[in-house]
Image 1 (tube, rainbow, N blue to C red):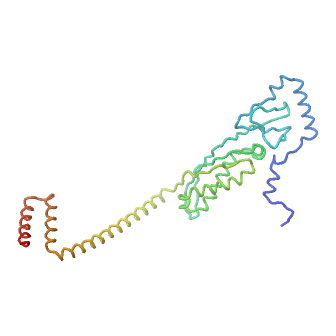
Image 2 (cartoon, one colour):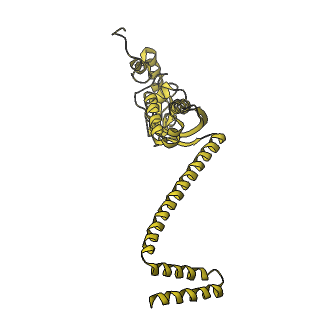
Image 3 (cartoon, rainbow, N blue to C red):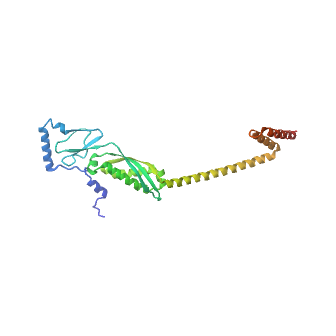
Length: 281
């Protein structure tokens, strides 16, 4: 590799318009003097044609003649534009939104999904935006589409659905690096939604349902095991005291009387009570 050769990034910076200011040249100065004299001769009528109002959120890039007048755009407020020689372009510096429509993407694990998002960007250098890009918003929109597709292709489906913030941050870094030399700054990127096909949704729903049923069966089995241990402990306690067994039996009959025939259960209750009283005596 030739050590004297410049890097691609350096060459891009050198090829950008508006980085270096250039003079008007001989013809340019002649036209400038002619336009200035014309304005002076026709004063004060010409002053109304030369004064332009630039709003607070706008900047004006002035070309004289055909070349950018300064590295920095003019405005806001009143600016002076010479007739017949100066041309200016207004640039809006407010933040604009760029909606990325849903695009079908093949993920790293060979699953298809549709991902859409929104990009917030603003122009911070009006000179670079006007001189180097024909349509800043369209360029940012197309670059955001391709970047979203490329980043999503390196992620699995679960990563896209669960890690939207990380993926949006990666897209923002890539977009900001690509657009900052063109006078545009990407302020924020948000992933709105990640859609999956209907067949895959049904498969995931069936898998989730099967997992829930398996978990319910495990919980039921654990409950039965705990209940059997409790019954075993209760049986051992009742076996040591026959009177406690009779009391438990009476409590069971009392519970049954609230649902079954109270007359029949009452007779059995009295019989059992008499037997229990006889044992106590």
